[in-house]
Length: 263
Image (cartoon, rainbow, N blue to C red; front, side, top):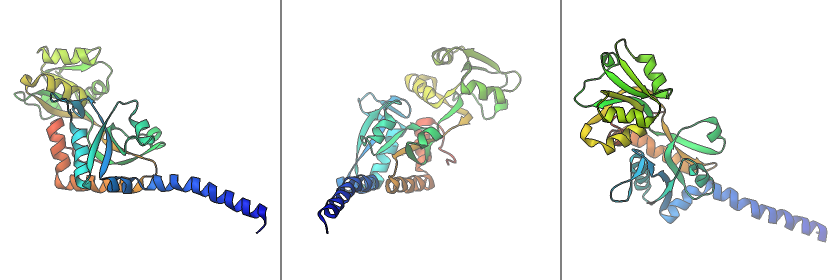
């Protein structure tokens, strides 16, 4: 081998050495988790009922429960990583978190930069009201008053099913919509699951419950690109939880309705 050939071979080996660890690392997220017996999971702490800080100053909510559930099924300790809507995907990309369980909806823009597991929980707009008021179908809304935020998705969806005789009170923001219901100006409220969850947590005396679904848009767990082994493992956990009814139990606990037929 000539000196030039030797140097060229060494250069190729050096380049391969630089490339391989990244490739191996990208595929070894699950191996790393199982070796360390720890998994870092990003969760919200300002978005009830999915993730928020309780009176004991500890994170709680549906997403937090799901994080602990996955950790238990993997047999590893869970390190919760608080995130916001703005930094949850960057945390995944920079490996500050192995998974993101933070009310992530799936769309083409996000799919271009991260991967998604199967859906684990519903995110929805619905009609909520007191347990003492019977509402099972859209027809039951007739003759009742209901608050909704003007122009919001729930306003549009409510308009599609509202029967004659329903008195819809529209407000300019969620605060006004919630205040009208809490103060008794209206009998029912049409809003998103997060707004309703926060309202119910702050006003337990109202005995508010889920009444009628307006629109469903499920949540998925985010996984970094290329971590197929971890993604498939989490999919196995989700599938088993769906079959056992555990997903329904979590959704009932935090959202007042079962998870239902998730994709």
